[in-house]
Amino acid sequence: MKMKAAILKQLNTPLVIEEVELDEPKDHELLVKLVATGLCHSDIHCIKGDLSTPPPVVLGHEGAGVVEKVGKNVTDVQVGDKVVVTVAPYCGKCPACMMGVPTSCETDPQTAMLMGSMADGTKRLRSSSGEEISHFMAQSSFAEYAVVEESATVKVRDDAPLDIVCLLGCGASTGIGAVINKARVKAGSSVAVFGCGGVGLAAIMAAKLSGAHPIVAVDVLDSKLEVAREFGATNLVNASKEDPVMKIAAECEGGVDYSFEAIGKTEIMTQAFHSVYPRPGGMAVVLGLAPIGETFSIEAWRFMREVVITGCTVGSIRPKVDIPRYINLFMAGKLPLDKMVSAHYPLEKINDAINDMLEGTIIRGVITF
Ligand SMILES: [Zn+2]
Ligand SMILES: [Zn+2]
Image (cartoon, rainbow, N blue to C red; front, top):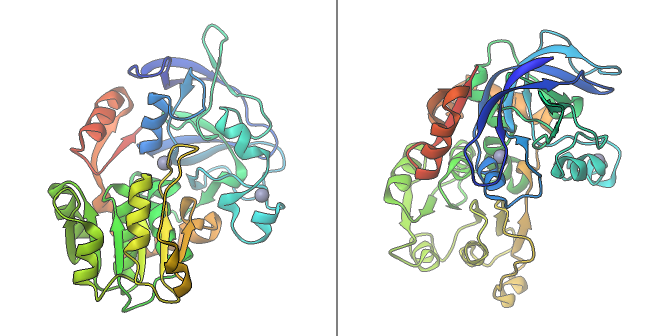
């Protein structure tokens, strides 16, 4: 079929809206008519060449829409279902999947995905001249339609506003899941969140929902810290003006119970670990992706107090279980996902949306179709 899509033709250039060809869904795949898609920092990483996905590529990986057609052997969803599409297709059979952490699935789908293909290693997107176009995270939602993996789709309730819950396909689930699923933050415990972009704000709203207090937000921009306060942060630390480790120790009885690194910088991972009070149960959770090969130092004596530092991919969620739960919490007024969406754009304005995100004038922009 023919459809409109925003294509990255070369690294570090604006996206170009063109008509492209999209092939039929194959086994365990389905066609989604997109209603909305979030814009996430990983899209920008790809534009800058930080990821391995080769251009030309249709970006976009926080899509939500309606199932238009199903391929063979699709059993989880039907035509007409409303779905959120996640960045985490999984096999359901590998050790990580069997351990209940499908976001760390160890099989080929994710490798193929990083190289711009669907799980089977082939592509469904072509230019009008017949040139193959890469998929992004097996999704490519900056387009009117997307062929996606069945395992990456989550059926959602009919009254869920897709232009808000689309954020749960990647960024919002990463922050919320880190707090609720990975750290299992307990009521009355203290939390520090480093980085107040979309992922950090999602972690802050989940920490508030979990009953954490105090909740310390750390960033280098006062404007972002003020937004963090609206999401539930009780203490604000501007890391460009004061040492966050010292400040957190002073304000939180020597350190917090849980810290979350939502930026992807190794020096901040060090700070996040050193901000945790050294006692059993203390945990630093790294959500951000640092450039491959980078290392960092932490004070080893802290392990004598059984403090933990751990990674967390896409919030360690079980997508088909947790995303509907997060949506129920949002619909009940307990997770203010709608506050994260500061602007809507039509697909034609996608380069404006990218610029606004780069300049930090929006929390999250959503493209609607
Ligand atoms: Zn993302
Ligand atoms: Zn797996």
